[in-house]
Length: 151
Ligand code: UDP
Ligand code: MG
Image 1 (spheres, rainbow, N blue to C red):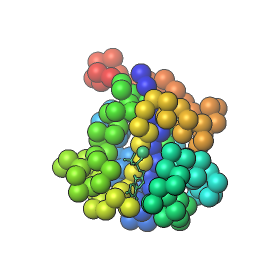
Image 2 (cartoon, rainbow, N blue to C red):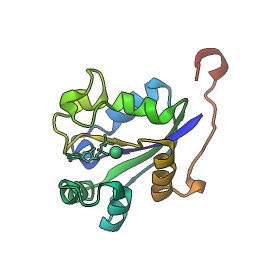
Image 3 (cartoon, protein in one colour):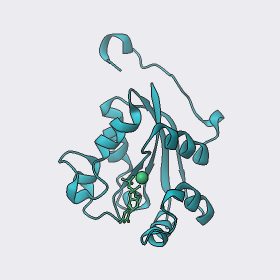
Image 4 (cartoon, helix red, strand yellow):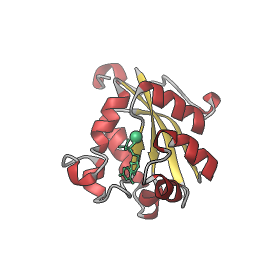
């Protein structure tokens, strides 16, 4: 079992897609163990995207991610980091495989609907930025899980 951090970005919220994005992860079999809506301040956004400091798109990325509310989410599942990124599709939606979230709902890299951690280490770092451990509900079981869900 692994955890990953997902953010449903402000563009998705403005377009009324929170439910659609959550539905994809939920139906895949991930367990939602943390969920909240918030608007990021600049300092927190810069911390979250620290690896991109100095890149040409950094300023516009921070402006965008702080422009409105986002939904922060922690998912639990087998290989959750890679599995979630596969379901999200490539960073540039033009290259995202059909059926992925970014392929279905986005067509530009700057407004690509969803963020997902790129490694287990990033996941733990990012979860720590958005959630207190006491806000998470790890390891809960679905009814009838043993019979119907092969997670
Ligand atoms: N981004 C952008 N222009 C670029 C590269 C990235 O606007 O040339 C944005 C895009 O929203 C992306 C985010 O910056 O999701 C973080 O980039 P990263 O390479 O980490 O992609 P991701 O991990 O989100 O697929
Ligand atoms: Mg990334």
